[in-house]
Image: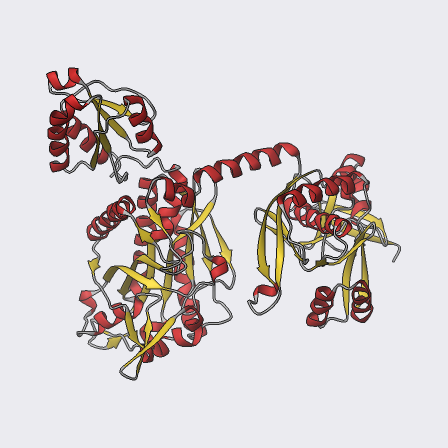
Amino acid sequence: MNEITVSLPDGSKRSLAAGATILDLAASIGTGLAKAAIAGKVDGNLVDLQTPLADGATVEIVTEKSPDALHIIRHSTSHLMAQAVKQLFPQAKVTIGPAIETGFYYDFDLEKSFSPEDLEKIEAKMRELAKADLKIEREVLSSADAIELFRTMGEDYKVELIQDLGAESVSLYRQGDFVDLCRGPHLPRTSLCKAFKLTSLAGAYWRGDEKRAMLQRVYGTAFADKKELEAYLARIEEAKKRDHRKLGRELDLFSFNDEVGAGLVIWHPKGAMLRTILEDFERREHLKRGYDIVLGPQILKTELWQRSGHYENYRENMYFTTIDEQGYGIKPMNCLSHMMIYKSQLRSYRDLPLRFFELGTVHRHERAGVLHGLLRVRGFTQDDAHILCTPDQLDAEIKGVLSFVRDVMGIFGFDYEMELSTRPEKSIGSDEDWERATSALLSALKDSGREFEINEGDGAFYGPKIDIKLRDALDRRWQCATIQCDFTLPERFELTYVDADGEKKRPVMVHRVILGAIERFIGVLIEHFAGNFPTWLAPVQATIVTVTDNQIPYAETAFNTLRAAGVRVQKDFRNEKLGFKIREAQLQKIPYMLVVGDKEVEAGLVAPRFRDGKNLESMTPEQFIAFIQDEVKSYR
């Protein structure tokens, strides 16, 4: 065959000489496209520019503006970083260096610990290598030859990877003096790595195994141009200011203590108040929607966890103990107790749906390396609920939860995205039940009118789920709400109801959380609001500030009046300058400062000042109470 024909995304076709590459196709369309091309997409698969085309293929030219470009740029930049490290630290052994959502990383085995100064040197060397405009070339070797090559180079980790692949051949990428094992694709030249920054250092076990070598992980990010990079770095700086761990200390909300244990939160008075406000809000919202509040024990017999499938599929995340020679599991979830409540009496179809809600504290064994402030802990409280309904009621119940999520996220000012996670490899239940559950969630998502993605193989072990990811003020995504559809556990626990025909039927169970883990949600809220909580949510809504000691008796009376009316108020009667006390209240991000001087005492008023410095008209304590109450109502 001397000629091939390929299809373009717009449906048009192009004829090329046999053996033509992606770059040849781009050149046949236009010199500008050939210059802009960085890779190709053949029948949906990303490939290098030099990949030969087959007759009948559907081909897309990938440029820096394409959705797939960022992944390729970042992956190529990770290789550029590894090359720079090898030139600066020849004794370093390279392992893996993938592109990730926020950039890339590469793990190195090196006796010397990298320092921040080393990152600057590595970054400078990367710029030097990029400027050298080295050609990035792909080659395919037999696995035996590749193993011999990397063994000669002393790259033991690459040898292990190839051996574990068990393939006849592997692909390598070369750029100058650097060669790496990789599937690709990559940029055609190092000069196309134009905008990058090394961001941080961390430790990482080889292949995530705590028994293997501890490696040094260098993180970085890369973009198509410097403007995008600068905008990203500005967001990172803002994120550092909003870090909930930093603000948690400054606002005296919570702490962690090694003497207590890793991943276990200690709530301070203001943090506990914030949490109480959230939990009270949750109870009100659930009661309005027909949920019954329930409460289950912290530990349940091991046999129950075996029956549910948790012991087989989830026990590595659980804690177990023995009492009076009987095994118990500390609950990582609340569903078992809720099923026991359902089973406590005979149920009719007329009783359904039943919606059991619990602010249930659970414990899960998380590795020390993944613990992260409030966002990843070992002990946390979920706003957990289980809906037991007939199959005919399932669609309406799922839609009811989606509506609940929409209402609550609107109150907190979050937009969100949704995805449907399907059956994982490690799961229980029949194919038929999984199909019914997945179809029910899919139907409700389609009817919601919102876009959603499919996340293959990431469902719970007992059923598929809808995951809802919040978008915060910095456009970051946070997993919080989830809706899981489960036909399997009702079967395992022999849950039944008597239907209209007098026959016993099996209910369906919907597992769902709205905020998710209260700890995690509070961490997200702190960063979303940068600690400036809206008045209804602020643990301290106002502070009364005196100008001199002369005003203390009146200020004390005003304080008691506000507190008796339910305003969360504190007082600052210290013998300090007024400006100093106001500045401290602003740093504590308290919504209102109520200044009391001689003029206010004489008139029976307080002078409110908002935390941004705006002064309000003076008013009586009773008027301020009404003002606060109106503001709080506007958020609900």
